[in-house]
Length: 201
Image (cartoon, rainbow, N blue to C red):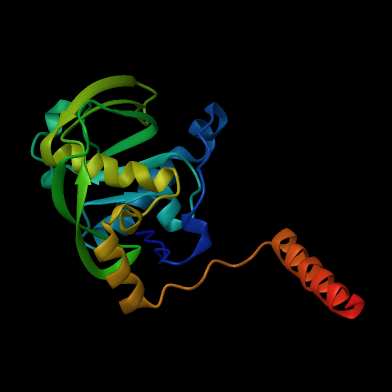
């Protein structure tokens, strides 16, 4: 078993877009990434897991089929009970009105209700390089949207309503966003300008 360490909020590696899996990586890395995703997910008794959560900054995630309502809708044969989704393209068919309670390995200890679309269209590639396009509905669509968000640097807490966001920030003492070097230099220049203005008076 090759279970990996799961990155936790506010780790910066969970943010930002993941890179597509390339043709070369299909030959050299994909099988190992799939195995690592599965082993880590099974070791933690999880429903799904995305590459960025275990340090693989690639567009790949895994979902345990036993927790899906309709695994056959994905049109692929699960490997060891797991569906692997590579380089997905997701579009919402209906508005985000369907509310479900979600949790996440990368934000342990909390559960919140999040609005998602109840119907999505999903195109992706399997580990066998099969291209698939499907329509996913209901709770399965929620699961896919949750995992897909990881590939674009989002966590489910980013989708909370204002009240829950405030509660989460209070309970978890969300750190203030670090200023960039450019922002720091701008602040320094502003302070210098104020000091010069005072000296002229």
